[in-house]
Amino acid sequence: MVKGSAAILAVAFLVASACRDTRAAEGKTYRGDNSVVKYSGISDSYAKALGRVAEVARGAAIEQFGFDMPETISIEVAIGAKTRLFTDGAGFMSLTVRSQADLRKPSASGVFNIYGVCHEIGHMAMYRMIPERLWMTSDAGEGWACYLGARLVDIVRDREGVDLWPDRYDYRVDGTARLKGQIAKTDPISKAAAVWMELVNIVGDKGIAPILAAWGKASVDLEDPGAALRQALLATNSEPRLAGWWRKAEGAFVERRPKSAVAEQTTQVENLSDKTAELSRDDGASAGIRSMSGSGHAVRFDAPSGDWYLTAVKIYGSRYGTEQPPAENFHVWLCDGNFRTIADFPFPYSSFERGNAGWVTLSTRPTKVPRRFVICAGFNPTKTKGIYVHYDKAASGNSYLSLPGTSPSPFKTGDWLIRAEVRLAAVSPARGASTP
Image (cartoon, rainbow, N blue to C red; front, top):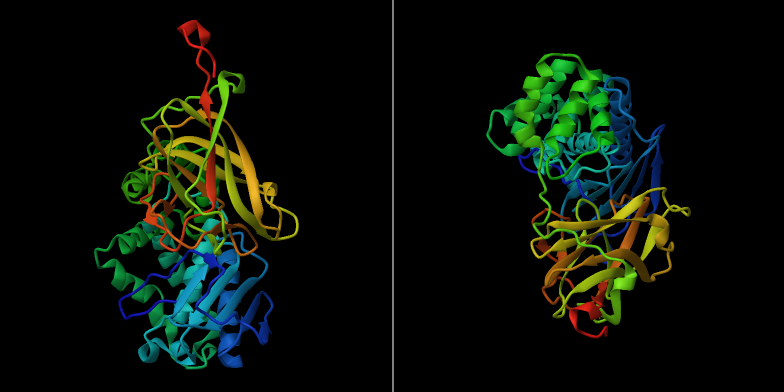
């Protein structure tokens, strides 16, 4: 959902929490051909309209642009303290309104609901093709959703007419006409939308999906993503203008995530002593849970004096979603004190039990830690798969919302129940000292 006459940005990340400020959608369900809307606090007519917008926009994303979209778009609508709309990027949207009045036409409510749904479907179209997007700037992601969302509004209007929305108005004005007005401004998201528009003008509507798919499959070095992305781009299409377009786009679309200046140093277990330590910031008692999309769970630690090696990360949590774990990995990173990657440890989703919270020990190859270091965990969750990580009741100032290479945001609710197990290196007898 988008508020304000000038706003064109919709929230595109999911924060799932044990504590919510909305009443869960319940009571009624609208089922369309390719949409399901669960709702309370709004009329049947608005629920049906939301579902119809979603399924027509979904169909257009498939038919006109060639995207791989979910069979069903699910929307949950609830009454809450403020208006907001977000998606998990896979096929689910959550819409919160203060009252049904927020669903009236934008001239009365200040909220662009039709555009908002189309915007989120734009995110789904991209995210399903590029599931790992650490190289992509947020401006690029939002700019794409602004562009495709506006195009989809126009298509929905052409197919459904002005009678689609209960509070009848000609919502064509919320589509590309409004986008062009935004592009005339200088904010980074609107500028990114203009770059996407230029790309589609070069390759055509059906040419964009192969490019996103190629980027999703590319082996990208996060220190310098541009080279692999350029190669993947040019391999999809022989259009000579693409090279020039990429020179313009790279600066706006690509975020380099330099690795730590601290080199990754590993050793064999037999080179470690028996002296171990479990480093923690939490008090061991859960006060809540969260699943983070678009960010991660991070904790900063200080190692004892000496040469210590990370041997395991412990996380108190549980898996949610489908009964069978997804066939994919999540990642745990050892970072320096500036949140830059030293080492990356992938683990299967099956490491966590579904629904049964507990401490999960994730063994790592022994990797030397600096005096101050950070453990980051990223699960790339959606509505139907993810990990609930627990936190305690008091924040020490050492827990963050962050992924490697991003600016960390302090987690002020508590401390993540994430711990680091480290072992001290053995001292070689050849150096004149006994092994501890």
